[in-house]
Image (cartoon, rainbow, N blue to C red):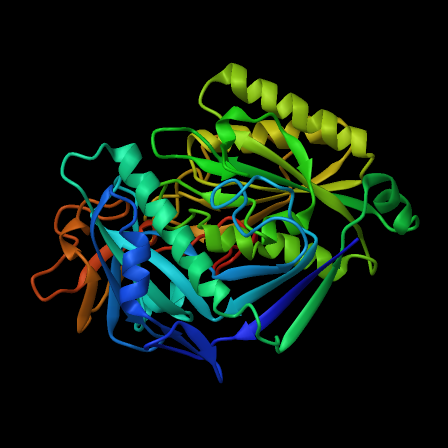
Length: 428
């Protein structure tokens, strides 16, 4: 089987009478999009704003970022189990509005939403300063519970991304990428002389607004399982969490997972990329043991030589990361860990809450506790009053002139643990 990903380059966005793509510009019927979002009676009010690279614009508080996509061939829909039946995806053909993103904002859901600056020093730390952003500022009805508020905003973003993606259904992509989608037996035999590698994908699932969804199912309710990498590209994994903005895997990050992309680039050249094992990050020790035991068994069952393991979040999830790594190493499989660090503002504290000498190949996404000063912006989309409250902020973060002093923890994607960022660290 094959999977094709066609990229339609979006160089600009603007409001128009019809939602359509024309000569690299995505035109959006603002009223039609607002009407679609307000079908959900949990949302009292929604405003749609545009934010483009280089503009003096700050978006805060940011909950999620989603890339508009549309399936034009093959089974299922984008975001299966959320916007349509949970049919298996990852084959056929999907079109991407490359350069556009839906950003959900508005009243704070938890306390770990983030900041996106479209220019200035903060823009250097987030990939979403380079995208043309359609921002949904959503306000809930009075008295809505937090989990319902999160669900309403999550669905608003997914519906908007699907609506915008559908505008490109009949466009010819400028780029067309093709991926192999092979059953396990064929994948293992495909390149017999190359080392076999699997990707172990930890999903944030600790509840209390720390959720990720797989085909519409909350990941804390799953046992570890195997999926095709291309299923992730079709939106089988969706963010529903409010963890710290710097290392949250937004839905956009899942759709564009750079570990999957890089493994595919090396597939057939110096490695044989077998597939993806997804697992959850749990609260109780018993659940952590259960899931990590199952992951190690699946990795052994696949007969691979190496595993890449990525984390989402910090603190409690560090235990899941280390537990999975140790058990996979004990199976004789070499591991590489991708994480970030909370090493204190001076960088002198222990980076992870757990450690083991067998975790000896680590890629860092940077220190989330590092302080950064952000200048005032001409326009605020959302509500700046929450800046002192969000994770990475503190009493006095927002200055009278509109400038901000925060930890990198507050910037969306700054220390992303999939490597979708610019920071890292070296050992000397």
